[in-house]
Image (cartoon, rainbow, N blue to C red; front, top):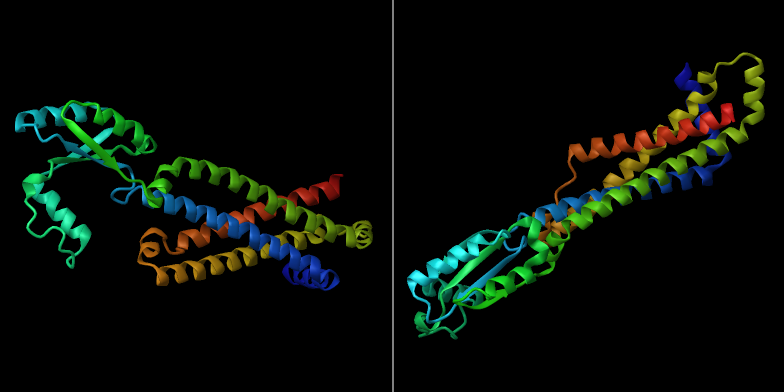
Length: 288
């Protein structure tokens, strides 16, 4: 009985203000889409930190005059740096093989090249918490006696990985803005609905109608708008991710698919925010 009454009032409210209801739904969809994009931005940044070479890595080339014993001393000095998580020796033969792989099988630049002309090298890994300081760390490594040169490269993925904490902090701020906006949209929508029915509500109150009978439809409408907006946002983001996966293998590796956890989380979040806005609007209308 209560649900049927609520649905009738919701239908009547939509017929009285169709554009207002549509704009409320669009606002819910837009806010929740932003929230989903923020969530996936954090997930992508987190995944880039797990990819080789994006958490910060460099190659230290040893001087030609360095003997085996001196090379061990250099490795020990580099390992003493608190920012270093590990290193791998790259002998001349392996260095030549890497150059050939980088140039491709069709290149003849390395034909007949003697590995002895290449320096021994150390591939150095940086701890994730120091990934944004790779330039300073490279300068410190280069000052160690016996190190001839230090090279490193930070592509776009490495830049994303280095900005993980900034992205995470920004996502918290944006999520807070989304909470406020979504709650405010529902608050205003419910307030407008109550104002349009003010005389009817006053008459029903005089006749002894309970608050649950008068105001339950607004809570149900707020929840329905949030769920529909969340469903549209999830569907749109899922289609966009599917398109990116089909276009790029890298996107398929970095961007996770929309999972049941995302669906439940976003819908629950949307309902909580919308119900909070609706409750505030009802309290404002009842108690002033």
